Image 1 (tube, rainbow, N blue to C red):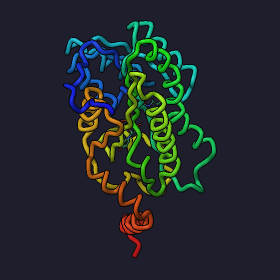
Image 2: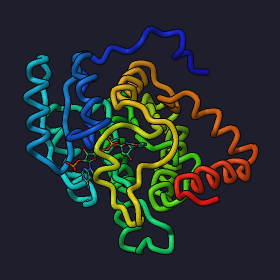
Image 3: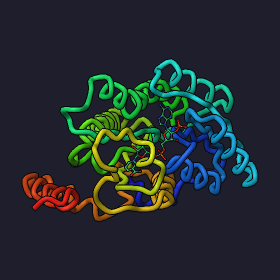
Image 4: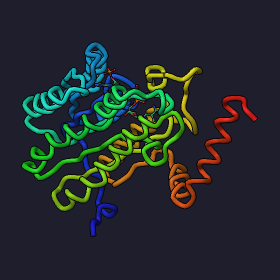
Length: 274
Ligand SMILES: NC(=O)c1ccc[n+]([C@@H]2O[C@H](COP(=O)([O-])OP(=O)(O)OC[C@H]3O[C@@H](n4cnc5c(N)ncnc54)[C@H](OP(=O)(O)O)[C@@H]3O)[C@@H](O)[C@H]2O)c1
């Protein structure tokens, strides 16, 4: 049995960390938090100017950075991203699959193209990235893959079916891989943020007839970032930055109908229906 809980936390000094979705929100805050621990950072996202802005901010903290602009919906760009980072630093110890986006729409209005695209970014990109890094980590005998899923990857909410499904897919990949890699020196962790204050709701694809801001409690991005760094220092299977989420996961496992009823009530209130 692993005795990780008895060991002192791992040092992140000099560790090479690749963060996807580093141009904004959780990814950006996670980069800042790792930089404070002396890690070396590879920053990925599509918006190059935001990555460069962040890199120059991190320079002031004495952090070595590499910007790797990439659209992770494209598997070729994912592969190139991993290899650029490995070539540049000569290693890649921590991969954080964080990039993602939301889609608010009833299932009937979700097109197959939208479904494919959200899976490409939120699930397949992590799959391709993991396939590329595992051999590198195996050779090094060390590695940590941290996948940022969502609370809705444990219990879906209405009008977020495609998004939830993409996060369930990511959770499934992570759970399976965690056991496949047991004993290899490579850790796999899944992060389940609840609603978080980022650009997420401003940029999500909204096909509803009203603004969509999700459901449930809301937390700052720094809280998620700190939880991710804690997990890198003391690897855990699952990270719930908002601890009460565990209660709703248990309740849903015991009685999905109860959670259905609660969600239906909340929806009625939002829509002003009796
Ligand atoms: N905010 C929430 O309420 C919440 C709750 C649970 C889980 N999450 C998850 O947390 C993760 C981070 O989200 P966030 O809240 O920080 O949202 P955010 O502020 O919108 O950040 C999303 C990041 O993903 C990047 N991204 C999106 N599409 C991409 C693509 N095709 N290729 C490369 N990068 C792409 C964006 O960069 P570019 O636009 O520059 O490419 C951005 O850096 C996501 O996986 C999200 O699903 C968020």
